[in-house]
Length: 284
Length: 324
Image (cartoon, rainbow over all chains, first blue to last red; front, top):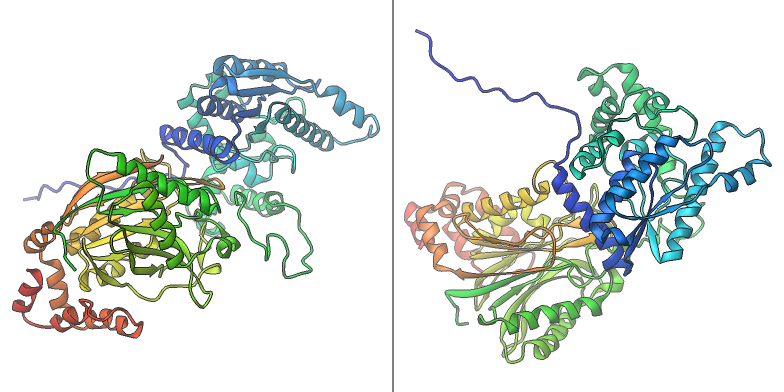
């Protein structure tokens, strides 16, 4: 006679980083209100809206946190930018009801690059990113607002951004969300599918996509990054079923870019060196 | 000291202004005024979160914002006079403390304000989290003891935030006779995979287990607001001695939680589930060791320490007395 056992199995662990998007929306809108209004007494936010999913999510969050009339979405095309990006940026601005500003950065970027005709595409891309930073800060000063950052955790961990360019705004609501989590949040917020489903791109070079640049899909990268950040070793992660080439690619990119996640390295001379001995939090 | 069986409790959760003692004292005064304006009687005990006077993450600014317990008491007394005149009540408040030897602590005081103003007890945080997002031990000194003290509203203990995450700390408080444990806290929200931040659920579990295991009340007051991107989860709550969640505030936003405490519930819970008495009886090696430390650290004479230590290792009859 066989006993009738009920077999109850644990679900296999899924490495894909997840969020409860409703909770994260609540948390991040509180964060934006708290940082701008309560801490700084400022009611206006400025978001560089590129047409991609990251800046779309930030625009939706700011509109909900502050009211759409208190948010300016700045479109900053360069002459080689994809027309689709510009259209998608307009769609975000229309859907959220935020105010619009269009600043063509071509003349400013080309004005400098005319003196550097041999600049590589990477250098040209960095000049564009840093020009957009100048525009965002200036547009913020114009309306007594604060530029709000749009860099996600995956690109921050990969160093896939322009130092003191995309990462420069003083607050960033999505910087601790992996790209796959940004996609989850975007669906919850109602960002149009066309923006969520298209291949992510920095749009600094014609036809580029993030995943081709990085050599790995965001889904796979985020799973590996998640394990790495939790403290698992490369060997552990490979043993969990990931390809050694992919794990090593992720690890290499993370290790090569720690400097990009910090401010300038300052030579320590005294016993009062800033952020070494003299320690005060950012909101002190 | 006349001891009330029943008393009214208020747990105040709010977002302090970073490093701004004056603004934060003003917020405390405003809370007093709100409570004084309510139709209900003014609460007997008002509890504020950890680091209420300055915000939690102050790093090397601790010395700038630290005060002695006596100075805090003086300020509270003036605030009460202005905002809740003629009221006598107890207060639990977390603050960065500087002692007479200029040592810095993350502390919480229990004081009476009004007719007989005095500080009953100052608890100095024992477990200073120094990992991950936390860096406390770099800036403040560890406390050394879990004190239990008599008040007009029962025998109480204070544990600050991570102190209470270690079940032995709540056990020591219970063995020393606490009927209620106050937990001023500052818990940064993290873990957003579910309907509430993971730390909110974890804290609720920790408190419910501590309350039900030892048959006592636990009152938790949490800081709220964001500090440098780190948002604190309030969820201020009272849990009864059966581990029953009596009331809980939302995990964001300023709030005041009001509840009644009936210390008879402690006796009822301990009769129904004599776990504390069992512990005293059945771990005769452990209990005296847990309690011996009090003498070494100069805790108050006359605390229930001696009584509990003597009961350890005795018969079931001894346990019965403890229960009742």
